[in-house]
Amino acid sequence: MEVCMFFLYAMILLPGIGASMYQVESFLNHTAYLSCSFPNSQKTDIKDLRVFWQKGIEVVHEVYYGQEKHDNLSPKYKNRTKMDMDKWTLQLLNAEIVDEGLYKCIIQHRHKGSPKVIHTSECFLHIIANYSQPEITQLHTGELKPNEHLNLSCSSSGGYPEPKEMTWLISHENTTDRLTRHMDVLQDAVTKLYNVTSKLDIPVRMNTLTNISCLLHLGDQLGSLVSVPLGIEIKVKEMEQVKINFFGPLIAVIILITFIPGFVILKKNRNISYKGVSLAV
Image (cartoon, rainbow, N blue to C red; front, side):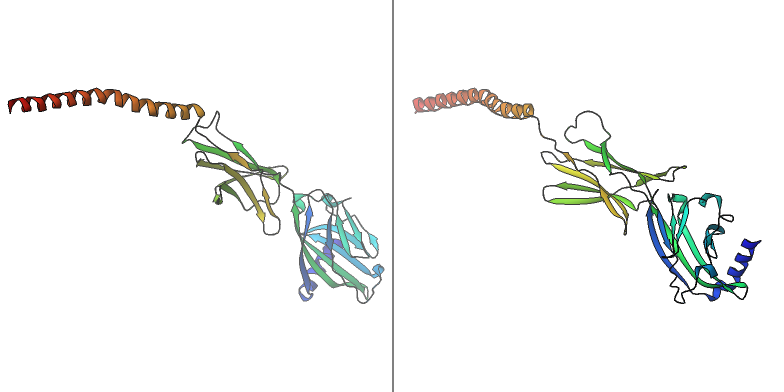
């Protein structure tokens, strides 16, 4: 009944109360700090105040005229919250992904026997879980051969929130190309953490060192993660070079052997012809 009366007061009085809104971030399984931003310029005694923290219709924490009260708390927040009344800050222990969302701090003052809302503030809690360093894997088997395509996969796991995109960086000599490919996103049904994968299929230059990296973009506030570069260099085998160097002169010799006798015979015939003409004169 008491909680219902509180929501009734909130519905009637909150529209006339100026509420501040701010963002806060917390790492997964760490303590989140949510400030009520209450200046208490009147130096009101805590024993004359009721402080409620809500998330939707759930009561996260309650301080009832100076005493913490746990009867009306949502079960998932019991034994997970502490209130620092000097800083008017709520500590949410072991923050989980399901804790992400909008929280409201509502303060009532005991006024002539009935509580009156004197302050409200809103705080949106963002949960962050670190992604693993992106890792590049070669999908093909065996040794790469000239003119073949390179098939790669880049993956990162165990992160939150969902990343923006994954970019491939292809560097050779003094140039770098940026390629954006489709990113497969999978969210674990239990942990709510994300695993992401992107694939790349490109031709590789011969006799040129190619460095390939993938960049995972987490957002403007969280930055990016980059993989360890993968170096690829396909060279013409020495045996093939030997064949080229050997067969080139050999072909030239064969040509000479084939055509030189013809030139000799032709020259002899011409000499005989010239002699015959001379005798006839």
